[in-house]
Image (tube, rainbow, N blue to C red; front, side, top):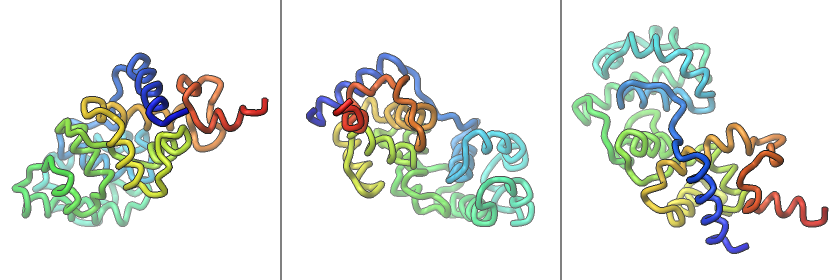
Length: 214
């Protein structure tokens, strides 16, 4: 199967069967989504959502977080993965946000990555979810699923992002990011993927390879 055919089939299926696809992180402002995405690195959205109401109440804006002590921030996130680094990143992010952008979360991924704790994936999430920019954030789920089903052979996050961006229409990139995340989270899991209930197995390269001689 040609890659263009695979993309067309998979996009069509998701568009019909998952017309609404959004982040599972809970937030009430661009600043709070930025906090949530930083906290979600190597941590489940569910666990992050358990803690963010208290965090958001204590830090409603960049100023309040910029003035917080490491100990206070750490105490609120200590049961989330890598709390030491994330506490420092959150405080540094808030201070940089004030110093560089007047407290406003920028829309350009190239500006967002200048903030402590913000890598390309986080920057693309913010740009896509908040500002509807036609970018695709590649996290572990998107990376794994894209390579497994045959949307990319990229060995790096950057190459997978480039392949997806080149083949998915601008108007669908925001949703496509969430399609692949949710598919990887609930169906095309890292271990024991649920192929029997997968709606895109007709176009999946790995499924075809595994069932060639059955």
